[in-house]
Structure formats: structure tokens, C-alpha cells
Image (cartoon, rainbow over all chains, first blue to last red; front, top):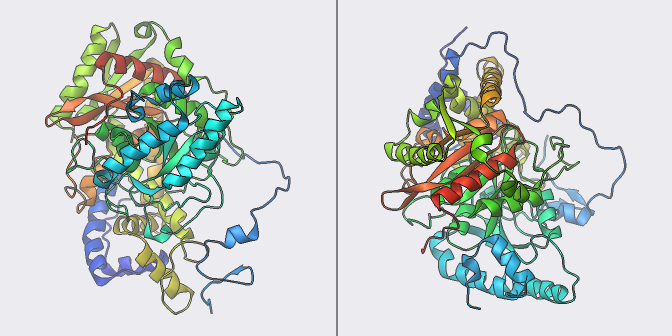
Length: 98
Length: 492
């Protein structure tokens, strides 16, 4: 079961791309050291036997809580757009995708 | 005005206002004066409301009070709110550059409840960026200092709220607790902080970090003040899908309701929580309180919960995984900071996030991206969820026999600014006592236990079974009387 995993520079590049976070060269170097130490710390849970144990995703002791499907007054458009760095004609303006 | 309002417990301020001994304007002026005197040294607030605005609100409330039209359990009481809790038209930054200019268009449910009860929001308190930290040093707005020793950290991530209480800048405050963020700063500043049962207090409007773990928690300088605040914020909320539909007792009443606690409460100290990594001084100070309880006739047993050793890595795997997903929303399109670069979506997005997030936040997002990504998911995230189940099982078993579990809140007294910030693992280790309550979802409180050398505060943590906040608060109030450590304000 247990595989020894090492975080390499290539893996950090890949993860930073997945997370859409641009890292500086210095940060990459630093993270290479830090993240491998964090990983070693994570690896401690390898020692726990969890055979036949179900996962817990939350502790709220609830399932499928739904609100009534009743329309409500939404926030005014101007208030919603207020914080947008760029907007145009009542729309958020996003960078070009293609 | 003979008594300085800033020195009073929240309940006393409210009583004085009601009885006409203090006007609401008197109270606000007094706190403004105190803030002016100490805030430069402490940096408890990221955003303070303007003097004019606060005094105007006080004047209106004074007039309504005179006319007999004002009501509310917190009428006229100033309160400090952690800056990850949304406040309509009042900047909410999460301690981050990426939200440095964000003005929420709505109030968090807890804020709405506070306003309905007549509280006056003083401002928004400093915190570790996105609540990721244990010292309030990762804030984009600079660190908060511990009022008991300005060279030391106040704990985190709700360090601004705790420091505001300990320095007399506010009588009551809200924090949030994902892995100890209310209790850690309470311990480091000789104040009181409660993390409620998961689902007791609405998270609607709390800016998410790790939503299966976090709760908004009341903070004060006495257990009774914390109970008062819990009374106000603890309510079923249809806007939070995890909000519990349960009957909530009057927590203030429950403090006086439980008599003969020593006959009702069986206490256990958890051996593992006094061992590895816990300083001798802390063990001694917390042990002294436990001994006093034995003298009072309480049954105190020592128990062992070996799986607790794995609580810290389990917590960090889950928290970072959830963080990487939650923080995907910061794209610089709808709100907040956007990097000034030209390029396509991916370039602008990556530059914005690379530039807008601080180092610890980036570390956690990338690590969480790792634990959730294909090939690593089973070994880390999924496994941690299973260990979580095991820890919950063990705690449920302990609560079959005991109603209160006791441990230190923090493994050490407050450390110095800069001491741990360069070493993420050393910082994570300070959460070793607190994360378990979040993993399990049970309530836990930190109250002052004593002072280590150089007058550094040390807290004691009490944990109880799900929804047993009433008993937990009663027990905490009992210990508070026993130690005499209540309503403590640092001279600054």
C-alpha cells in the first residue's frame, strides 16, 4: 500500500498550475523544502489501521437539508457589482478565455 | 463617570446602561479613548469605524432608550468582529491583500443577530490571513501584539479579537475557530473563548477556510459574558445547510442552574494531551487547577486516547484540502484584488492569486491541491477522513463515562513575534491540543488557568459532548471562581 512520495520541483509546478497560483523562483525553492517536511508529517497517518472504517466528511448529523423553493428578493445588481475590479454594462468583466 | 466603562464586564456595562448610570454615548466615548491610547501598540483592528459614525449611532440609541423604544440584550454594547465575518458596508478583508478593498453587500447571520440585539460594532479585528495561522502574524495588515507582553504574539488566528479584549479596547468579541483559532488566542491573552458544537452557530457570511471544521465563537473576559454572547448568536439558520434545528437553552441561566457540580460531573484528563511537546510550566499550571478540582470533591480520572496522536496531521490534511477548494473563488473577477497584467484568463488568474495571497495561504492551497489530486487522494485526504471517524469514535466512548475532558489549551505560554513564523511545522505544532474538538465537532472552551513566569498567560481547555455547552459553561464558570482569574485587563 504505502508508497514513498517526494514532492519534486516538477510536481510543485504542476500543483501551482492546478491551483492557478504563480510562484516566484524563490517561493518554489522554499516550498520544495517546506512541503516535503509537511508531507513527512502527513505520512504519520500511514501508521493508523483504518480497515473497515467509513470516512467522515462532516459532523453536523444532518442529511439533505433543503430550503423551501420560494423566490426571494436578490441583492440589487449595483450592490453585487460594486466590488468588481472591472465591469461593463451590468456585467462582470473577465479576462479573455480564448 | 466614576467607573471606566472599558474595565467593566459586558454584563455590567449593559446593566449600567439599563439602570441609567451610564449613557451609551459615555460608553462609546470611553472605549474610543481607550482605543486611541493603546491601539497603536497592539494593532488589534484592521478597520475601525469612524468616531463620528459611532457617536452618532450611540446618540440615536440613547434617544430611543430615553423614549422607551430601545430594546435588545446587548443594547449599547460595543463589540469587535473578526475580519472574516461579513459586515454590510464595512470592509471585510480576511487579513488578506486579495480582499483588501472588499465591502460585503450583506451581513453574516451572527452580525444581523448582534444588530437586532442593539450591539454597536466597533470595528473589524486583525487575524491570520484567511484564519491560517496560530499567531496573527500572517496578516497582510501586520501582526497584532500581545497586550501582556508586546514582544509576544497574541495567538491566532483570532488574535485581534483576543487582544482587543485583553487590552480593554472591547468588552466582547466574535472570533472563528477552525482548529483552535478562538481558544488559542484566549489562552495567550488570559481571556475566555468558546468553540461551539458544529452547527450550533450559523456560518452564513463567515468567509470559508475549512467548512467541515469551523464555527464562529464568542469571546470575552468572563465566562458569563461569553454565555451572554452565545445566547445571541446561537440560533437555527436556514441559510446555513449545517445549522442544527435543536432547542437551545439559556446559557446564562444554565451557569447558575447547575448546583453541586462535583456530584454531577465526572472529569477526565487526557494523558496524551499532557505529554509530547507540552511545556513543563503549562503542565504544572493546568495540573494545579485540576488538583483544586479534586480538593473540591470532583472525581478526576486520567484516561488515554492513543489515536489523538494522529489528530494534528489528520486536521491539517482535511483543513488544507478544504482550503484549496474554498479559496478557488478568488479570481479577481467579482471582488477583491486583480493583478495589473494583460493576458488570457489563466495568466491573469495565476498572477492575481500569486500576488494576492500570502505565503502561508499559498502553501496550504498547494498542499491541499496535492492531497486532493488524482493519485494522492486515497493516501492522504480519504485516509484522513477515516482517521477522523476513529477519533470521533474514541471521544464518543470517553463521553459515555465522563462529561468533561480537561487539557491545556496551548502547549506553551505565548511565544515571541518571529519565533515560529519561518518554520511552518513548528507553528502547526501549537495547535496540537485544540484541533481535536474541531475534528470531532464537540464544544470546547479556554479559560485562564494561571500565569507562567514573566506574567505570561496560560489557559486550560475544557471539552464536552455535543450540544453540552450549558454544562461546559457552568463548569468553566466554576473554575473561574476557583482561580479568581476573571475580567483580566493588561495595563499595556
